[in-house]
Image 1 (cartoon, rainbow, N blue to C red):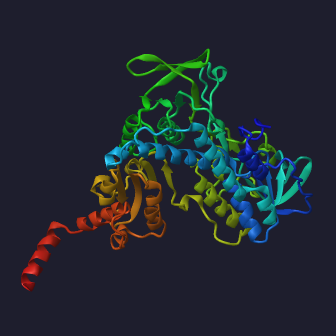
Image 2 (image 1 turned 90 degrees about the vertical axis):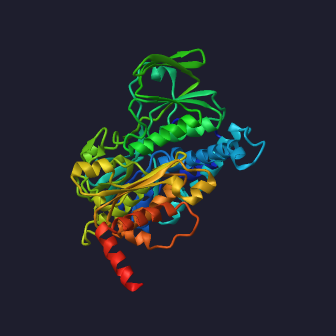
Image 3 (image 1 turned 135 degrees about the vertical axis):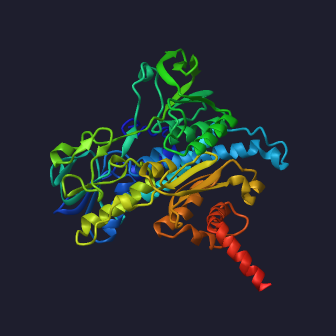
Length: 508
């Protein structure tokens, strides 16, 4: 049971409650009757959103899930990781309390078992939103079991045949494990198993400096684990702005994480209770000895074993299901959304992909919604957070786009100074007329703040509009208004300054 249902451990009251919601053992699948408007294969974010909206519109909907409703986000991703990060930030705040005149708080007693119990408790509570019973109450036929396409218009699950007019593939992705000699024999954790820990390891190596690796490296370090973070590239978060990645590397080192960049792992071996990692760096080779290894080297789409070939759906083992800009596959009756087909493996991307599918699948007489038209923000929830929306500076250069970059250091924001968090910045890239092309924000609450920029981009508002919007003082969001003010000052050219000076002289 533990292995089959996503390695949910330990089997305490909270995990029992979780499974009762997202994979109830006494669940009775309904008897299908007639053709469904929509059959959804996979009950992660994309699948759940699609099923809920379709049912709300009066469509006849079936939802099929072999493992855990809620998918990666609820069970092994966003929800447990952010609960863990919040505890780690609390511990870090205690250690820096002396900087604010608060004494005797710099050595917090981290009860690791209690931290992980809180993670399980919060996850269990949130799981009611994704429960099988809730979706049955919404009018969705919920099937728990292995579903696979048997032809171009039918899915079978536990011997029952579901005939569809339209179908959605939303089977998500899983942790990608690099082919490192000895890794499998030594044993390792992924995001699917890390939240089952109840005893704090003394040492941990994390392989991969992407969002998962960086977030969990900082969190576990702050909770008392000595972490070594190993990344083969020259910077963490290789997709991100280089200046942002440099601040993150500094923050990780500040917290005590041992950082190895440009490092290649040759092999791993088990010796007694320890795992020994042979690492080759640019200047020397070394052995890293740890109690646990966490692999965070990306995600692979779940495309095997669901009959895609039979359904006439093209796919790639690394890229996933191949879709057009409307999220339709080669089979015009079948769509895909979420991690199984997207390079942007975020919960909110799966959510909005599902909304595109609902309109394009159920309302073919309406204009087609296109994925490329979405303005996608994302955030890495380290401290400070790194959030981005739109295009990066290098992308704009590669396209030959004419643009300006507005740079505002976080230390120029009064609220940041007052709170003692000044490592960060805002970069906003704009067209000469003020159209926002992209932005990167590094700040304690960057994930929340980036939405103002995303809203402006989505509504085609120029940055000058933000400059004319009153912001409460003092807030972290003032950094965005400062960027807008900087743009408006750029419009005051020397010629315009001379003209204004001449006019003011006449008005004296």
